[in-house]
Length: 486
Image (cartoon, rainbow, N blue to C red; front, side, top):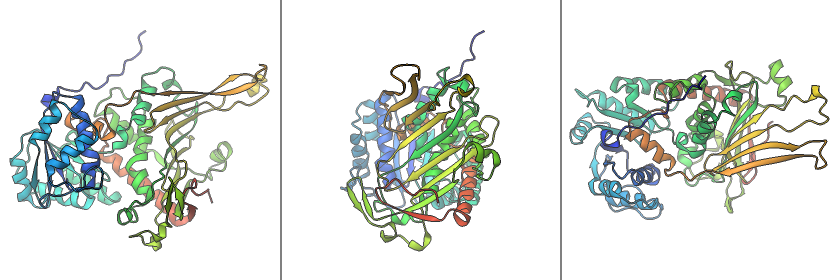
């Protein structure tokens, strides 16, 4: 009997897809530093693609800093050229985009401005909202005032979708009145990171992993994204956000959902977003008081939060967070969060899933790590316990590691631990390059469904409740590994 085959998405001919990309809020840092370089890496790979890029904001250019963050571009065309050059892209598609790009001043909160903008572009067109959630909400309200929208209009919303559960629901409802779900992209560039896509390939393209990808064989999962970076001048934004909202809600929860989703019948915009949303819907905080949990996984603290004090990390002196510019110490904003969750499904019930992200961390880790259960040797008279197998994939470090045991207590060499490690081919695209490919191909398979964004905020509410009741803010020196469970 033949094995069931997974149906991979076949990307359509690029010539039949998005012809115009309009970046709203293009004067921000995101555009020059991430969006345009990502687009450039895609165009270098697909020389036949023809795309017109329109930058737009309320004011005339000049706008953003260049990719090196030290010279302000004089024109929008300069910004595009510098961004493409930063990833060393060449070819006819790159040349076409550079020669046909233009800047359009547009107040996205004014319906008349948006109508004029849409009337002057070639479709299919995607409006990319590189805007704060509050401005995105106003822009959607302005679009709703138009008599009609183009049938071939796509909307791409940059993270975060809303600022809490209520605002996410409201924004999703607004978007649903404008375009259908298949024409909506809720962007999380972490889903385009090589390590995250490696997990998908390792699990579904290799028979050795999927049959054991459940609670019977996996003891725990850890998803970590620590950074040596401190605030780096982003105090005003970060102090009103914090680690949980900035990293868990926007990124690590989505990575968790993709890692733990049930096998889709097809890799398409219906199955994958539905399966990842199902994981988030079943997610709750780890119950440390559960008799079963305490017996099998003792000592787990569900929520730990911290804030860095003065220290040294990455070779730089870092001031106390409370003394950073634009920081209000009374807010008790966390720069470190570690949360242990449980996905309460038949496949995953009882498996602790730890998400962690911290700033100003010494020797930071950025990986997805799956630890398997120990072999059941005790009843066979095996004289010594063995360490569990573990599979680790780096987010961006381009490596896959499998920890295994070799030898035996009966071998003169004894029992040894072996790490099988391999680099993987360098990706042709940046993470935002993958995002651009999905958007321009009209393929929302690896974007975030509306209800998944809302479930993310629901989980953040659980974490916030723990902050208020049982997870006091701890301090840790910059350059350390973060706080310890209280």
